Image (cartoon, rainbow, N blue to C red):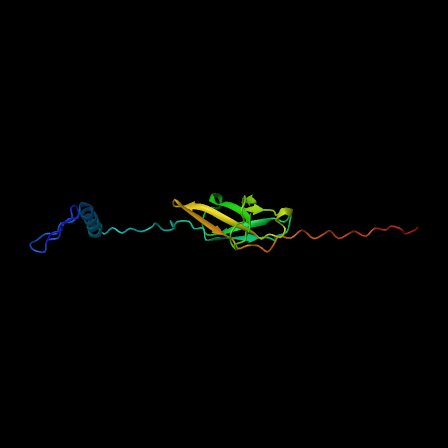
Length: 157
């Protein structure tokens, strides 16, 4: 029995032979040589690809207080970029417009009051872009008003 499609090789059920595509034959030969020679393909110890597993926000969402993005995983922190944004109408998604900050730290401003913030961390690992996003903060609040200092007015000598 012979395949009628050109380039796909054929299978002979009578006689001796099996014709195989050249690339398949090459792969088979290399695989058999590796098997006979006792080769095994393994990653060197400790040579695992880095990971970027997540990002979380540390700090209180108060105007003037610093928020810090902390990544988890083994990615080189110097290779990670950050984008801070106000959470939009869809939970977990940035509002339309430009990011409010970049870098591992962000200090909320008065325009952030009432908005939840989130941060996205991004890096490239083995030519693949990896991006993770934090959970949203509580809504940003204004700092508490300063407590007035009592003065000694109207007191006589």
